[in-house]
Length: 415
Image: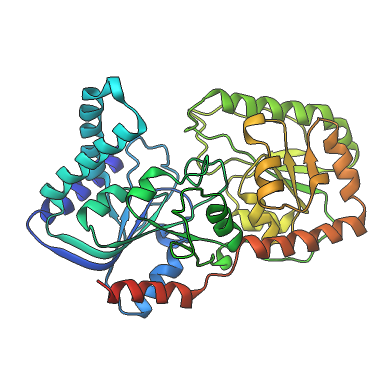
């Protein structure tokens, strides 16, 4: 609590000073307070972009979003970033006031209008002397605020996690999120697969070759293709998180996992399999239910980097996690669980992403042992390793410095 309070005071000092002292930048980076942490708390997704700014002598700043509730206390904060805590607290207060006034008409449009009003207030008080030519966000953090501050600035949102047709934050019912359309946001993606999903499914015509740009992903931060060992270790990445709108989803996940293991325990034990469970990075044992399994062939590892875990195992399994992509980059096939209607891999992974293995999907409890029997065939397994690695090259393309730097310089020169 003391640490959080100290962070708020530091943030308050910066923004109160900003009322009187002007700041101007070429690029402002905006990131959440969790995920993708590297040395010194740096965000490894943004790292190659920041390196490009340094290389081209561009003046940049990093804002890091707040974590007032302490949900992500296990994540290191970025040592170079300005914490957004103070502004976030004001936003929370103003949202409660505006939302209460319009509680009888709290539609998505009204929520956006309230956010626009709040952003205009914040600009008048704190950001009158603050300007940037380019804003680069993750999870489109505060894009309405940045657009209010600099109406002519270029605002880019870099892909963070999953993109698919039917996802409200990507494209749904043939339309992009209104907030991205209204604020004229450029979307940066990891690969052409994601780019094509956005453009091809957008009936509104907003997404196009001009505003969906493949810059790729710095794969050094993720797994790399490895030589396969004769191992029967399985990495199971769980997806139990504290911020599901429907809390029953977590309980459902736990039930499915426990029943799946119970039903196949005898097979797993007699065939010398070992399962390493890894909680989701946002898992919180105070607010999330735990998977309770006491078999000798099961243990949890939440400390070892996922890249190192993937080096130890021959098989990965999950429901719908993007760890499937990370496993594929290392040439590790994933077993996908289709026992949850709302997050079936049939639509996203099989149809949209063209995941090459329909035969590695668990639809009934007995499918688990059948799939393991299939993968126990060395020839079949090696072929799947090659196929999934080839598939990963279509999903995650290498970070293209020239594309990104040209994009930066083009927009800076035009401002």
